[in-house]
Image (cartoon, rainbow, N blue to C red; front, side, top):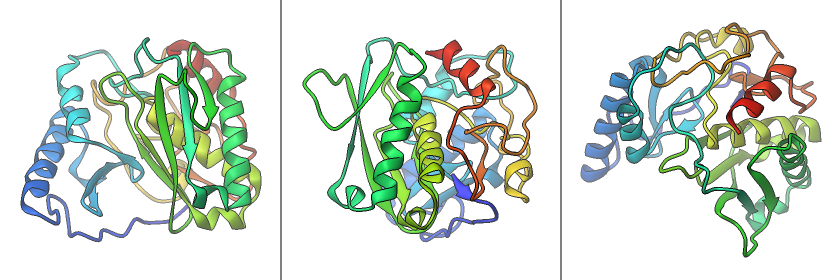
Amino acid sequence: MFKKAAVLVVSCGALLTACGGDAQSENEEIVSNLIEAGFPASDIMVVDNAVYVGRDAHVSLDASREMLQAGSETAEQYRTTNLVGTSVTKICVIPTAQFNSYSRLSAGLDLAIENYNSQGLRITFARGSASDCTATISAKTTSGVGGSSGFPKGGKPYGTLNIGVGLQDYSVDVNEHVITHEIGHTIGFRHTDYYDRSISCGTGGDEGASNVGAIHIPGTPTTATRGGSVMNSCFSSNESGEWSSSDRTALDYLY
């Protein structure tokens, strides 16, 4: 997730270009799988030797293969085919010491966890490690403003949140919003405005409406509005960090 009009810098070259032989081969397969799954090539980029769609959702090789194995469904929006399985009941989010050193990032993480736990889902979240964790996510810092994560694979949530230290200059509510958004990707949510990023970003096009990669969640709108969802592509400086009614419907339906 990025602040409006922010753009990722591609540090290892253009599409289909990686920083090493084996990695390049893997990335080429990931890109090929994503295109076959319905994501437009213009929305796929390689950053620091990793493949992303929608600018903030990392896709591993295994996850890209799962997208092709899931079969077709009638679809329009909000989730990927990859979801967190029923064997996962408690997800522990473990921040690094550097993450904890940023007071607003740290407070935002607590509020984001509370956002999920307040919904009475079959999955609960906790901060830090515990003996009863059935999955873990590492919360790390990165440069800039915004964040990135990725989609589930093998029934497990994506294992890393990368949150920009520039968010320390924003309110705790904005930090809560961004971290809630990135956790949403780790359990399978697509951007609400995936079909027109200009709704929340001011610029940008279609991330790709695929019948395997952008599945509409029943009971939620098929159109997005600016400020209408935590899962919109971009955020503003006055976010509340709270769920919209359609966000709650989506969470309840899936989990």
